[in-house]
Length: 277
Length: 279
Image (cartoon, rainbow over all chains, first blue to last red; front, top):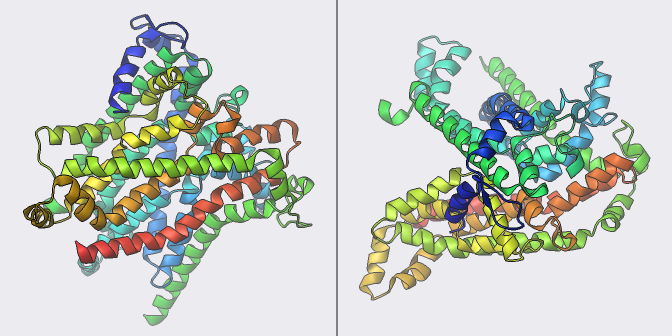
């Protein structure tokens, strides 16, 4: 199996120094010690990645719900809108990132629109404060998959529940808060779990957005140095195979822990229809 | 009441149209820019003036697009074939045959889905270095012939829905497991098998990480995703390359995927209805 052997081998390498020449040197926990105490880029990349997981992912989920809610209220011609909303999801990550690099570049189309509206234009991918929000926009553009799943679950919410809510005289917001939201909470949970797993491994968009070559990785000013990118540099540019393995295992444990926490708390906010009827 | 409904409908549609415009705009900007001269692409004017086709010629002289395209097609096609061939017997054994430890193996396969690519890529890289495969397309293609957790999972779920009586009937007729798999199950599961092949094809076409680490150091094995990202550094460093050419490359790169999407939308819908009738 191409998974089981690498998993065990990777755990072993994480306790060694190995640069592909010679044999791996057993060094015990020193990779891990160096990571937590002496490697500022480890913490920087973890912070940047957490931004994508904690800030970008929830915004994208809310946006996906919003799009699905708009789609579900269209009686005729909904299929066309659905195709249009979904289309960006099909665009390869590299092509999408290149496109956004151009669209958001100073003097580019976004600049033209924003200055027409007299809104000050950020420098996006050239400004450390605006680079990650630029990637957030890119992520929002491609929320199609999650949106489709939300749409399917919204279509499953039975008419009777809304009728009952209307009889009770519920307002629009109350209908959403007490009928829609509980009914789609399993999908929100699913989106959160996959968002965490995917978000911590964020790589391609960050790599391309920071210039796509070794000397510029993480630019501007380290704001796009994501965990996956720092791991890539350690492993496949400096060939610190032991250290990269240790980083990979720490990443794996972080993802496991976050997923576990989500599962534990899910009992409190995820509502499964099966248990109710 | 009726007037209110019409107003509501207008409101909903204008919201949907506004969102549709937002989703479509990036495509429009990229497409328009691919027809602009180098100087104009640096201005904030949106409409090409004059329209030029040269970007689509430039991109081919700038990087070996045909070579990269060929590599990408090879990677996407062969890995899709590999995933389909390897997932069928494993999914069959996990769903249609009874043996000890079956559930344990299934859970193990599911667990690997959670494993970050980064964990497995380092040791695999070392293996491929020893095999002298780095810089070729082999590390991208060969592992797919040994199974892929996601495809196995998807196919197993589909095999589970096929009634056991069909297999039993074939068994009564004296068919072995291999025969049942190839003659009974596979024809019924064609839509699902096509789906996993298609998913893998799209994944490979879009893939950046694996081609970057396994093949990225050899110009002969570079795929479109890696090749296009490498032009970017030229654009930003010395402006000798125009945004127009880069956007033209992006358009050519995403075009096949968009075409497959419009085509496959139908395949998927037909597949679902087909199985609904047969299963």
